[in-house]
Amino acid sequence: MNELLRNGLMRRNSRNFDTKQISDSELTDIIEAGKFVSNMINNQEWNFTIIQNVEILNKINELCSKLFFQNGKEKLELLYNEENLNFLFNAPTLIIISGKTDDEETQNAAHATFGNMMLVADKMGIGACWNYSLKCMFDTEEGKTLAAELGIKNGYVPMSVGVFGYKTTRSAIHSLSKENLVQIIK
Image 1 (tube, rainbow, N blue to C red):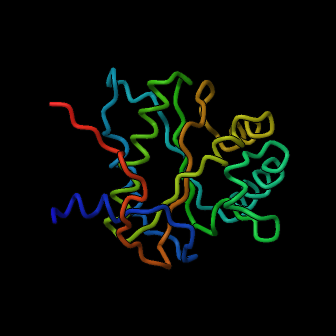
Image 2 (image 1 turned 180 degrees about the horizontal axis):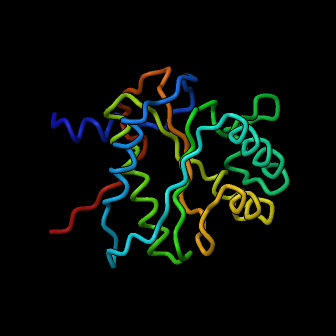
């Protein structure tokens, strides 16, 4: 099997992380993988905020926990329970990709950027988990205040948010569970 295809098939969101921080050189490679992703008009109008400070990570998790059950999404409640609520999954690094505008093209580019970063991280043995709950947190007034405290540039909106860290479990290739996912028209 092609190595790139295998990497794409094997990558899964990680929800179990070692507390050991990823190295600066690995973080640099992950960020580089994101900085050069092309988008529709090739403007890359985004900014990366990387948080590795445990106290700030705990503050973010507490705010997300507080807001989750007030504004939670039913589908997401299956992943979380109040007894063991950690939206960061104890990962040591949080990456926020913020865009200059909140239009659909920039949003899609931010997600593609994050996906590219996750693939590169996985190749290095680093797990990642894109986290919609954290993105939703930044859409609230309290989240916007937190974004300002984190130094997210004025006029930029957090678009794609997730965690990175060394995985404690390995991913396996899973077969597709649904039929009729592909239509080929020639």
